[in-house]
Length: 236
Image 1: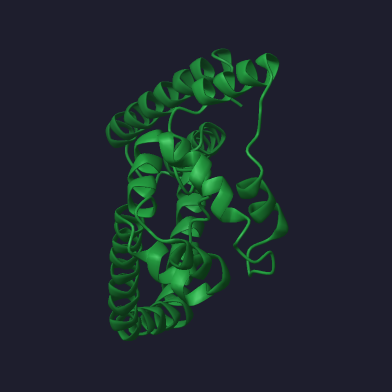
Image 2: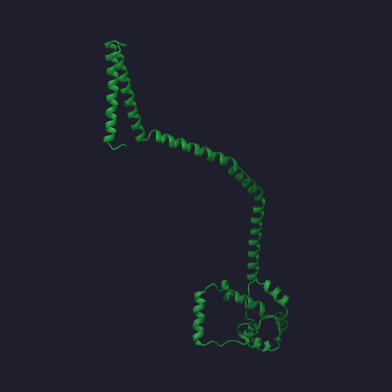
């Protein structure tokens, strides 16, 4: 609730208001600072007037600081100036009467309406969130199931694929390919030796030996050149 301090009278009626304040009981539900400040008009000096002007310029929207603006204060004064001394005394001594008057002000009604609208919107959002709670719980349970079952299987499969990838990379790495090329050269060399022994043992004729041996040596030297080029280029 906004705590506004509003003047009782304005203009030419101020002397009358000051005289009436002597009839108002000092024991009221107001804090002493409010009653004293209302019963004793201040006489600011020139320096305090400058300070007040500076504060007003620094905070042009005084209502946002808990104090009414000049226009709002004028509206409050217009509501109070026609009240009798008894009515004013009741406002000071009866908290319910003060609250009723306070809540009847247009500025307060506007603020209360805004508060009620915000409260309704907040309650609506809360209801919508509560309505979504079962769906949220369902999705959370599904995530738990996926994490404990499907995710575990997927992770296991991913690990297997990673292992296969590493094996494939090793098979086709430059060093592995160079080693395989050397093994292929050695195999052709062995086949050439076997073919040569067959000729010496007269298991094959010379014409057959020449055709096969020439083919094997071509393969061997081609692979040897590739092996040499790879090693020369820095492949290990």
